[in-house]
Image 1 (cartoon, one colour):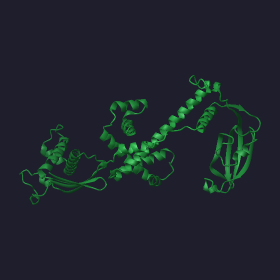
Image 2: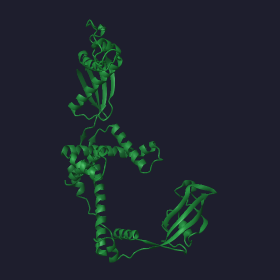
Image 3: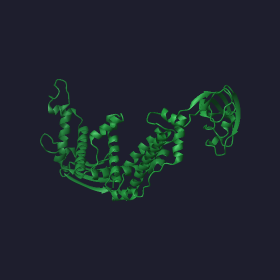
Image 4: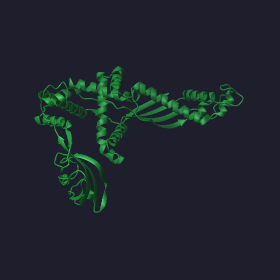
Length: 422
């Protein structure tokens, strides 16, 4: 057996292999024996058919093909193990020469193709794509230098008041009104919109509830609702802005037919100690509630800042890393991003447009994944099965379908925690 290989661009390896006839004959005999063992001929028990009859009954071409595939598969697996290659794509194989006559002897023991006596039993070429080598810079130094510039997260008074107001809004009570609607009232309406006498696609909305003055309709719509009462039905027109988001309606008059179902006055509670106590025994005063809100905002901002810093550290490591990234890894990552985009609401966008827009992100994500994997390998930061199973159980995930995903999440977390301690 003679096997030669060389590395080429794109994290690919070209392999040339030659097997002697007697070496290839071993694969032929294994496949032939397996095929003849399964032959069933009337009058003979399974497995007891005479060898000569069984060999005549099998498909020799199929056996020959299986022997070739088996031989090449074994060689690629052996070389991958010897050289620590991780094959990431289906190998491309070209059979240059194969001589069944050299491995299947006649009854007399002589080869029926003597002119091929010096030919190899099997000669082939193969190209495999492997997980690329990753040459990393001093990633600990990069992380340390970046984190040294990190600023402490601050919580502004405006952020605190906005959250306090949100809590207050969550405890609003409603009081039905029979008089005209005012700003900040909750209204429930039916809307039918048209343009130039034709109904606008998706322009019919039933029992839409919103706070008057904060609706999602175009500017001027809410002003037309003010003063209207429960049961009122009316029509009005508004000229769409020249830069309206729906191009076909830009600058045109939009006709609205509206029916008022209900008008409710929103009564907001006062922000005081009594209000705080209603939220739970932990909040003994408004000050305690405000402190809790401040702490919560800070924790949330710190988490967001941590994720942003991790992404930037990874970006800096990426800039100084050397990776011969294979296209198949970018393509597979891009497949995942496209599916994520569709699940997030981009169902109507063409795949080709999504792939074009997401290609650079896919490349960066693939590189980041390789960097994290390499650091984890160097630092021996692999999570054990107990950690993975605990995380799966905690999040009520399916073990078989989520194990690898959870494993990679925990591994990456360990890598970032290492970098943050640098």
